[in-house]
Image 1 (cartoon, rainbow, N blue to C red):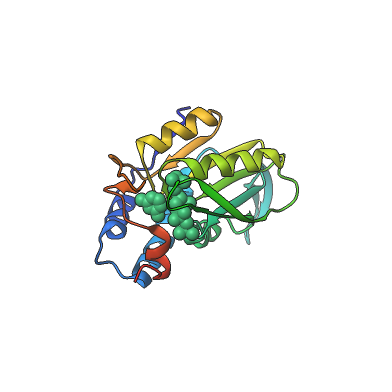
Image 2 (cartoon, rainbow, N blue to C red; image 1 turned 90 degrees about the vertical axis):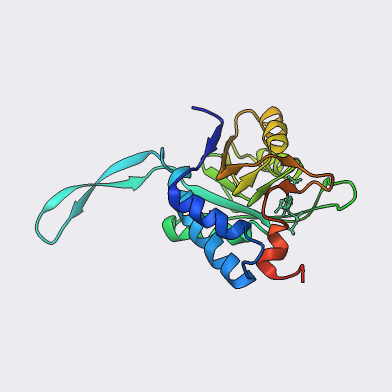
Length: 209
Ligand code: PRP
Ligand code: URA
């Protein structure tokens, strides 16, 4: 299995174009990001293990399936919140932890300010949600933190990634699969992804205006 998986479904490509467009308003940005997240969730859970279970239809008994691994979603605040709704729509039993982290504007290094995780991380599949994988600093710090807390199976789910970020995260945590909808060209001097979509948190919450 490759460690970098590009989610290239046509509907994801369509939505990503809307999200990239600078004319897209915050309400539309939030709605489209949520919809895209559900599409991404299908790709990220494609290989989930299933238990066979019995089920009775109104007509007779048959065999059905339930998901084996407990799933924990871990959005990185703020922008990761925009992916949670779409994921829980298709994974309603997932528990949700939160990591508060922002990039220092000068040094571009992550500063963490909040952590609340569910219990029993060891046997769960953890999906870290963050639309942007830029320098990779936040992603590496988040994975490191979750491993320190006992997590063993972690996937990093982003909307847009830079080659620099993928390299940094893969080097620091080679066991972590990275999912993204687009591997963009490069970072600019301020650590923004080109072409990217700008500041995801600001665009979601209208704080850039
Ligand atoms: C953004 C984004 C990531 C981080 C990526 O968050 O949501 O968490 O930057 O950058 P990196 O790969 O260089 O670490 P930001 O720091 O802007 O915080 P916010 O979501 O609160 O706006
Ligand atoms: N964070 C964002 O929100 N956008 C970028 O392009 C890089 C980091």
